[in-house]
Amino acid sequence: MEVDLGADRWRVLRHVLRDRLGLAGAVLLVLVVAAAALAPLLAPHPPTQVHFETPFQQPRTVGFPLGTDDLGRDVLSRVLFGARASLQVGVLAVALSVVVGTALGLAAGYWRHLDAVVSRLTDLALAFPFLVLAVGLAAIRGASLSNAAIALGVAHVPQVVRVVRAETLRLKGADYVLAARTMDSSGARILATHVLPNALPAVVVQATVIMPAVVIGEALLSFLGLGVQPPSPSLGIMLSDAQQYIFRAPYAALFPGLAIVLICLAFNLLGDALRDALDPGGSR
Image (cartoon, rainbow, N blue to C red):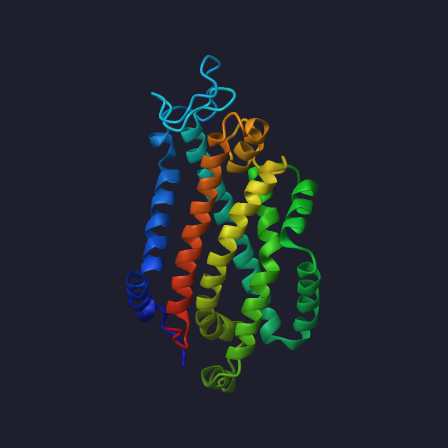
């Protein structure tokens, strides 16, 4: 039986709203995204503005709610813009991995002669931890936000390929796919109209799994100097800078670290609720 995503939209929404953890994740994600999107309006100061006369101001100082770093830059402003950079990299990387991985997964699962090639390349890529692969790609392409997104997206393509390939292998034996074959529908048409819509729930769940890993990956690349470049703010750069004076100003590392935790927690909680809601077997 084919999945009608339009008809199931409200069922999924109701399930997420009834799931306390899923609802908490959705609310937290909305707040995080809103804060990042409205960073230019919410930030008390420009994120790169230095105040040499007020370094290491403690949190709750007048004019600096979360304190300042060694250069007197406002920590709150840098956290807001850093979260914005993390989400930008995350969206770009997830979009790249989903688009490329879905196309390859559909092809590998449906056409046997392509399966051997795609599967072997996927296994080869999965032999390397994704962060090692991402660091290598970022080092080759150079340090920038866009290159970090490409590196992290490419590193996660094999995960999407495996999920979509498995779904395609399961779905291509379904009655409605066999019926479409008897009507001489082309493979591309079958994949687009029958297989892909029914594989989308698994792709959506996989995207929510990849997003937290990408946010952590972006922070790591920036920490190593392979992601967003100073003076542009990044959560990873803030952590890298803060390690030099962790005992003098621990809050400078605490707040960007907390921002990473909240972003990842929001996607994980929402992802778990979506996985249960989109599970055809009804896990709950």
